[in-house]
Every structure is written in structure tokens, then in C-alpha cells.
Length: 459
Image 1 (cartoon, helix red, strand yellow):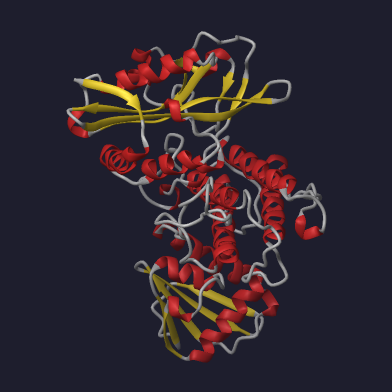
Image 2 (image 1 turned 180 degrees about the vertical axis):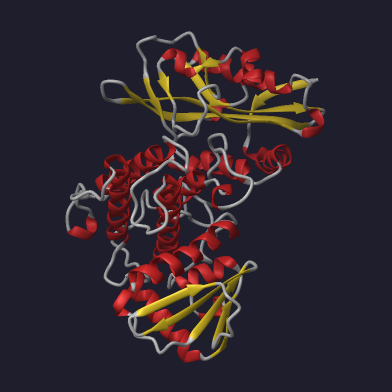
């Protein structure tokens, strides 16, 4: 006999195992763990399905913001996730869970419950396309047909606007349908989701952090300064894409604790609004779409997608180091993931700093060819020594000469070699990791010259 009931604290481990089995990954389990700790958690709308004493299904309904047309906001309901154990699927368990959750939501007087999902399944449960009821997409990358709502008894047709997600969703990149990607090449990476992952992670961990904390990787900066810098970069890039030219001015960030004014909330919200707007601008057209850039060889939206991921990913490591003392700090395996005290924390267990190989390799190419190769110019003071950089099966040979930089992949014998895993080389080149992150062979002086040149080019 199937029993649908409210989840209890003793169910947590079994629910986690079910979510991992149902989705084949940890992201949804991490999302549920984080949402339970967040202010958006609704205990009476977090349900399990039990059969013969075993949990075979789970559904969670939480609050998300609806930004109303004409101003203002209110919280509405979002179904995420819904899961059934693989060996119990196609037996009506999901519909039973969803039905009970919606019945309880209706009794609360709520207007609707939204979700992203397969309309073939959810339409049979009474869900309809959200856009037909004046509810706009959380992001342009979410297909209109995937954004759906179930209208409840408290529905008011005048309730219209844009549903957005709390930072925990973005931090795990666990929301939204995957953006179209190519079979190979730079566009095989879902860059917009990588941007949301890193930008959302920064948003979540700085929610109640001490923004006055020093950032070791950026001497003289506080975490608040870093948020102001990153928010400015995001706005500058969005303005560049919109206008087709480098903007002459960018709105100044609001003062934060590091400036001796304010509580930090205004700066934090300014940062959060900025990366979301950037993501929408970059999602408005395909990556091959022409766009003004500062790259000598690439003038497309794809350039900005990748450039903004690298900017944000590198600074996410800076934030983690500032709040927790390094990339080995609190992450998905436990600990306080937002710089708070731990007890009752809303955003625990986010992630330790990591970057996927494809992103790291693109970032290595960018910092060597674009930053070092085109921006150092006559500031280069090398003696012509060649340093080969190797990671993930790719190689770059860098020559630093008086006033000139060469970067190529020819099989020229180098004076030194720097090699390692893509993420380690990526962090090393951006000055975010020491020599322990890579293997250095050959002329140590040539390698030291390369590190100094990179610092100048990217500074």
C-alpha cells in the first residue's frame, strides 16, 4: 500500500539515496539539502511516498520570488524536484505525490505552483504553460513550453510577472533545461549554465558573509570590493553587447561595509541583479551571433559567454579563499558554505572550488593567447626563453621577448615545461595557485618570468 506523508528528519539519508538514484547525480540531492536549510523551505509541502516501509518517492515545494509587473514582489510556490525510485517508476507514485502536494497548496490559499519539466508528463497532471497566464520565464534559456504552472483555487489573473530563482538554485546549476551545445569545439560547453553556477555560488556564499574580509588573491580588496568589481564587469559586458561598443560609463555600485557605509545588503543585491541581467543579455541570441568585443579574432556573443565565465570562476575562488582560507574549504562534503556561523545556516554545503576540464582548457587558451599574447605588448621584458604549457592533451609554447610575445603550438624544443591537470594549470596561470598545483621542469627563471608577465597582462 502506498502512503504519502510529510517528510520527517529521520528520512533525510534515505531521501538523499533516492534522489541520487533517480537522477544519476548528486545535484538534486544537494539542492534538497540546501533548500531544507533555507528560508524558502516549507515542511508541510515536502513529502515522501512510502511503500512496504521503504521510501520510493519524494517531492519538494518551496517558495520562489515572483517580481510583479508594475513593481513589487511576492513569494509563490515552485515544485522542485519530484523523484521516484527507478524500480518504482511508471506506477503512479509521482502523480500521487504531486497530487497531495497540490492539494495541500490549494488549502493554503496559494494562487499557483510552478515548475520546469516535460509537458507530456505534467500536462496529464493538470499543468499548463506559464506564459499563457502572464508569467514570464526565469531565464531566456528556459524553453517556454518547459515553464509550467498548476492553477490553484487562489489564482488571480491579475497576478503577472517574472518568476526567478533563489541563489541556491543557481549555485548548483540545477535549474533550467540545458542550453543547446555543439558536438565539439568551444560551444560544446554550456557556458550560460557555467556562468550561473559560479555567479550564483558567489551570491549564495556572500548572502550573510562579512564583506569586509580581505581577499588574499587581490591585495587591498575586501569581499565587498570584489563584489563591486565583479558587478561592474558584468554590467560593462552587458552594456557592451547592448550598444555594440565599450560603454563610456558604468553605474557605480552602492556603498557597502568596506566603504564605511551601509549593511552590505544593497551591494549584494546590486551584484545579484547584475549577473542575472548579463545572463539574460547573453542568452538572447546564439553564441555565433556577431557582437562587439575586444578580441582581435572573435566578435561574437560566444566570446562574452566564455570571457564572463572565466572572470567569474576565477573570482569565485578568491571569495572562497577569503571566507574559508582556500579551495579546500567547506564545500559539498560539509561545512558552512556562505561564511556564516554554521548553526541554522541557510546555504550550507555548496561546493569546493572546481572547474571542468573543458572550461579550464578554454581559460588557459584565453589567458595565454588573448591576455598575454595581445595585451602585454611592449611591457614584455623576457629574454626569448620558451616555456611550454601542457594540460589535457593540449600544448601552448610561450616565448617572451623584449617588447614581443609569441604563443603557438609548434613542436619547438622549450627551455621549460609547466604541466598538470587542466584545473591546476588554469589556477596557476591566473595566479591563484602555487607551483604545487603543477609540475615545473627545466629553466626555473624562464617560468618565473612567465608568471610575472601574466600578472602584468591580467592586472
